[in-house]
Image 1: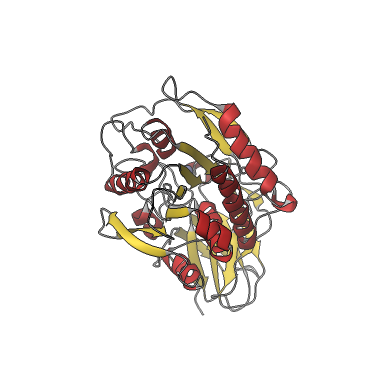
Image 2: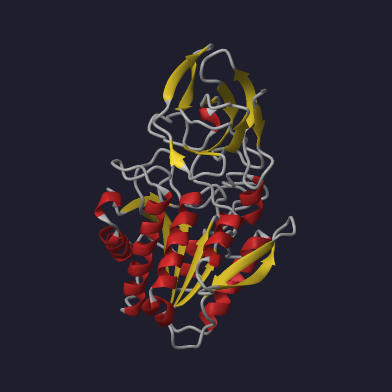
Length: 384
Ligand SMILES: [Zn+2]
């Protein structure tokens, strides 16, 4: 049976270059597709017709991925048919003609069809599956449309009542950053199972900000026409998705005494740490390590030891993004325009340097995050 390569499903990404069936284990050479971005990173494809022989997957264009060519510590993910996702081992570095190198992951799996991705995929169907297990703990509301005509959805456990402290979470400002989604998934599950958290706090969340790129399988970093996380004020939002999110955060703020904003991301592809990047955005929002560092340390300490990050925060130079589309990141907008506590959290694609995270590990991080936010907001300690 001929081997075939497919990406025609939500989140699909990958360009097939060649199939070598001469070895015992067939080898599939593929490129990440940058699609509407300057650089790629996300990939997700299905190889069928393998007849139980396993597969070698070879990434041919690491130079064209954000953060570059060193993929030596990156364990990607796979599943057989519709089975559970698992991690591969580390890749082999393969020297190729012309002085370049490519990265190869060998997957020894029975089964005719193997699905492969950069990290655990998280699509609308995954969110729907989780919500269906949470007994109506969260309702969902449409808050706007994407350029392609998809509905942007916000989850909520209740409407604000003026008294209850509130949290606004966002995910997938960068579409390929799925670790943040699995953490949000774990957070939602934890809140649904802990009456105290569900009752004491108003939780709102927009799980997929850059929804079009999530479905289209684009990494979504700096995409056309502009990066969702550089599209906030101070003039006007530079993307319709962000207009919807900004209006929704303001809607919650108007009826809430104390609001906490948290934006979930993923760091470089080969970073083995999850942390709060503390940006120095200049005079309107100088880096405030003493304040955001406290949240970062609390979150790190709250995480189970086996999956705890080696670092809690990193100081970064934010600066203005050059070019005509310069705008604010969500965290900067929330902190400066709304003057509310706001944190960005990077969740590793890989793990903490000792453990490569599973889906369940990401969910455990989400439980820890829910507890950390609750402690922060119930104690009402402003970050800055
Ligand atoms: Zn990001």
